[in-house]
Length: 366
Image 1 (cartoon, rainbow, N blue to C red):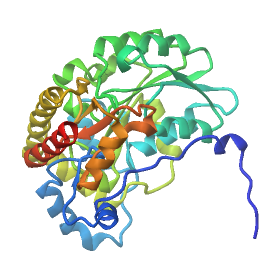
Image 2 (cartoon, one colour):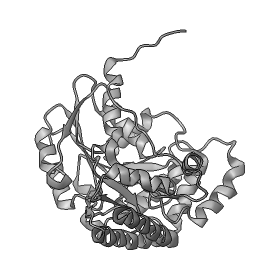
Image 3 (cartoon, rainbow, N blue to C red):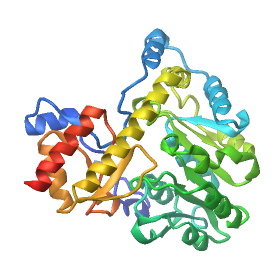
Image 4 (cartoon, one colour):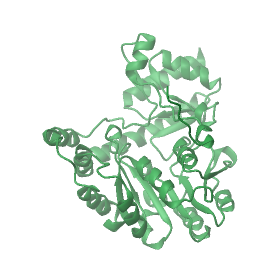
């Protein structure tokens, strides 16, 4: 058998490990009903307009999509209030992250800065590209260490990455703090703000710098259709960035990364304001319910601006996670984030939320 070699540093990181599916849990524990509150998916499912758009266009699946997804790019630019040439639509925001690391940084010279217990994609991309990772400790009580990020950057820093709202804590950085951070970074350093959960932040104008995008020269904001728009399975996201950078990335990318049905789904999702607004109402109602009920049960709860809540139960978190799992409720134990004493639970439907709290109460009070 032929042997293959890779750079040693590529082997020095743990791969991203997704949670088990509903079907896998049903088979493993012999369950007929499972509630999944582990992957931060939309509690209402998929927009009816999206379903119709996919069905209407399914017969066109043999055709190539239009390269660079121009219709969706225009729609996104209009919704975000930014120039069309500053928008790059991708196969999930992960594609944009990957391209940023490969195009902006120089292997063996550049470094990237982000804080600990954040999205595994940052470290994976950096190491695959031969870049130095500067991982900054979080502040007290998992606070976002923006000042420390600025201090860690130097003339070789290609990017400083901030996830806001943050996963897994749900904490968010304010616009003023992000503006200050962008202003103190080295000349050629990008501030990349991963806004996968920004639609759930309230009030939005207090948290997203996109509203003042024209005032920044080094800002990249990443967004996704996976959460608020309910399209996690379609793999659709986008970046908002300086026009020259977007043009370079557009010219360098491989063709047709966004499939035809994904573009149609994205356009329909933007059109369905009723579904979008109902999603936000459901999430904010459930988020408040979780915060109050988890606190009542004696858990430490972090204030969240996302569609999930992170909490520390008053007993071993791994035991709580496993007991919930065996009872058919999937949440996320945060050991893989380096927070082994904590659990993340995303907002479900009102019924699912009540069943989770009831099951957790039985465990903690049993």
